[in-house]
Image 1 (cartoon, rainbow over the protein chains, first blue to last red):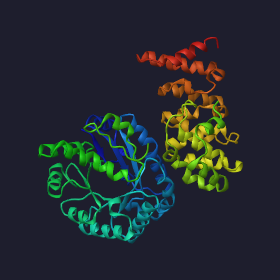
Image 2 (cartoon, one colour):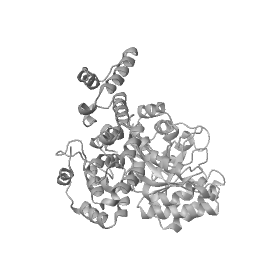
Image 3 (cartoon, helix red, strand yellow):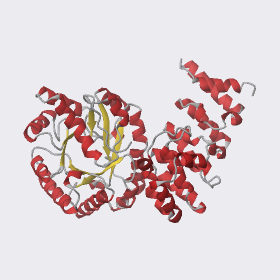
Image 4 (tube, chains in turn red, purple):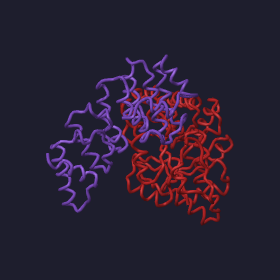
Length: 282
Length: 196
């Protein structure tokens, strides 16, 4: 079984995690830029973080046979801090990097006017740099936050197929499905979404445009929950091809739209039914 | 040492690269967006005629070399500062081929402080002649420590001295005490330094 985790914060994880992930079949990942628990207070700490996402972390992942790509953005929480706003001016440099396959995580945290402005500006950057966008939905006031998110996406002019809306649940899945955006679900030990609930959502809404991630970070989370979800799908009667579609081909299709996804190293190892799906890069 | 002309012959200035070189010559600031795109545009294959170099590196060196001479050091510094690992490696490998004196030394020092073997190796090319002896010896020792082949160190035998031999012997003792192996190329170097 091959698994692509389209959203995981490896900066916060250990080499033990990389070893266990590789052993479980998780050989491709995307690490979105987000906040680090401790708020940052200067632009310099962002650039060091972005450098790590296009430098050190891919190197670390490669030691364990895991292919690492990143998404880059000013996250919604820190968009509210005027000391961090200048990060926006530096984003174009990072959005040209080979390993950057989307703008993200953008979106809302507390739905402030500052967040509105930064969200819209970064969707415009996604269009300009011809990159897809990874959109975080707020954990508080989620349903209304998701509606507002979809309105901003529609207004920005970015193609809905270039947008994934993340951290969805039973309440928000329908809204996003109707918008034409991709749908992502973060499987957590006991909060956002669980493997059995995910299986039910896939039964009800189908596999098209569906992404499953662990969103594992510095909080209580588990980088192997993508694999647990794959196993739960099989146990519930989904086929191996269904699992491969949701947990490999879908994220490859979504991030492949950047033209920069390069899985040549890991796809040599993991081909499905003899077929390799190479997209972007060389 | 690999020359600019060898890289130009291996990755000719045609198509995207030809246009990019013209743009950079006239508008040096344009390199900020062209440099990271090089791998996507010219590919990343190893160059058969220039061992140790890839197509994207050859293109990136040419972009740096196309800058007006008085802009080279500053642009190289900025491209390294904001570069991903492949861009940083290309800047490091370009340094001995560019019209600069020792302005690139802080970039080497940064690369040697990292734990990324590709950057450490790229920092020990011909431009490392600008490193002082203490920094150079530490970098060579770090190569051995990280398991990098010493073939990545330029002018190794010319520059290796008694002090480096003492440092290497210390590492051998530690490895022996721990029951761990020492890389054969490091032992061979020590053997060559025996008389010092």
